Amino acid sequence: MAEGRRSAGKDAGKLDGARILIVEARFYEDIADALFAGALSAVQEAGAAFERLPVPGALELAPAIAMALDAAEAAGQPYDGAIALGCVIRGETLHFEIVSQQSARALLDLSVARRIPVANGILTVDTDAQAWARARKEEADKGGDAARAALCLIRLKRRLHAS
Image (cartoon, rainbow, N blue to C red; front, top):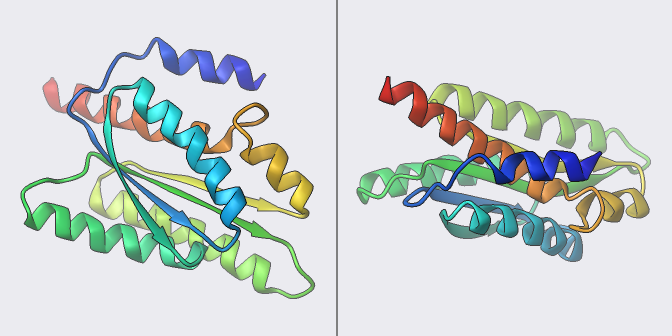
């Protein structure tokens, strides 16, 4: 099933000249690297340029994206979209619910308010094994899925603005 999703994005066309911001929560560094590998493949396949920005955890993703969007806009080099990557693994407290729900809400709010594609590639899982199965490019490739979602919305925005 994941292979079908991956192949669907291949025929969507190149995005030469597109600038993508990839912000990654580094709390689980190895998992973040695996998510980034998938996102990187999808972005490169689309022919888009990217910048990579690390942050400590999932709650820092949306503020970092907002700051980077402002800085890029001020520099006259705006981003066409952003990809948020990270992982939240359930523990014994309510912290999991707070971090997973609030990070997702903040990313969606940012995307809608700024009218810019912001893809949510934050894994919310119960175990390390579940995180790895979703992060690995050879398995669920959730980093690649997030990138393909952002790229799809960038194409949509370009199409809507062209008409």
